[in-house]
Amino acid sequence: MNTGLEAFLARAEALLARLEPLLPPAPPTVDWSTTLACRWRRTQRVGWFEPVRVLNCPPWEALRHIDAQKAVLDRNTRQFVLGLPANNVLLAGSRGCGKSSLIKALLPRYAKQGLRLVEVDKVDLIDLPHIVERLVGLPQRFVLFADDLSFEAHEADYKPLKAALDGSVAGLPDNVLIYATSNRRHLIPEYFAENVASEHLAGEIRPADATEEKLSLSDRFGLLLTFYPFDQNAYLDIVAAWVVALGGCVTSTMRQEALQWAIQRGGRSGRIARQFAADWVGRQGLKGK
Image 1 (cartoon, rainbow, N blue to C red):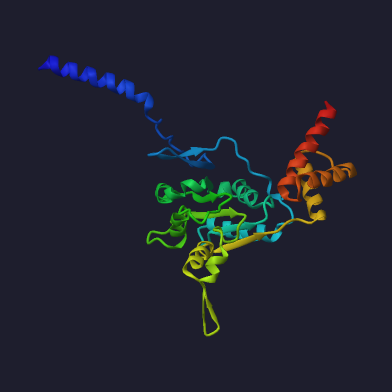
Image 2 (cartoon, one colour):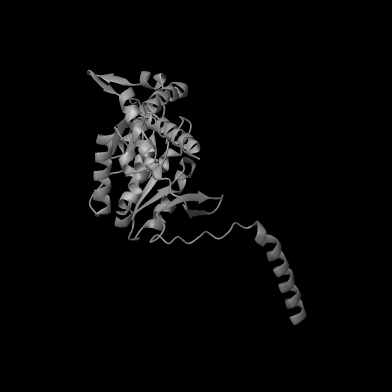
């Protein structure tokens, strides 16, 4: 009997030794007292918080010509970290105008007050209930950050987000908000054929069900902040702010090259201004070497 048991245990150990390399590593334990930001990662069966070792948070002062949007988002976040009622926020509009940068810049601004950032990819929004469950009851205040959010007509990934915002009986806990960015105001494309199905009753327009479904997602964000393209003067001012932030000097030559850079890149935006500033300051640094 003992011999048979020993043989069985030996075979079991050999089998486990062969299976162990195929198993995913154990999810890391996050110390939120020292970890400021995480990304949500998942395999087919397991999801976990992956700490961000190097933060990409732009200086708050370097974000120019979006003062109205900054003021509203800052106020809402200040309410949140103080334990007061606050809204989920959708930042929508022109590409490269500071939507995601504005959210990331909040982290060092309010980290000491307990603010933490969790970045969630669009394809992982289905895990929102599991993510929220792991954050309930923690003393920190968590912003779930969904960047460049948009959905095609055939995708259903938006439904967990829609439920988390204002549709589930569970809802979000007091220490969790959702901040999302998108180039689309309504997140999901609308088609002319859907408008044709709308009804007209006694002068009142009643949108078709498909249109209502798409509009209802963005409507569930309590705050909508809209971003617009920058004019030339605003663009040059943003370039100068980034050059100074990166340790460079503002010159007339820099301004001329910044305009040429914008023409080559096909537009004026905060992202293009930051990219030019990095190139300019770097080139000037090489001359100094």
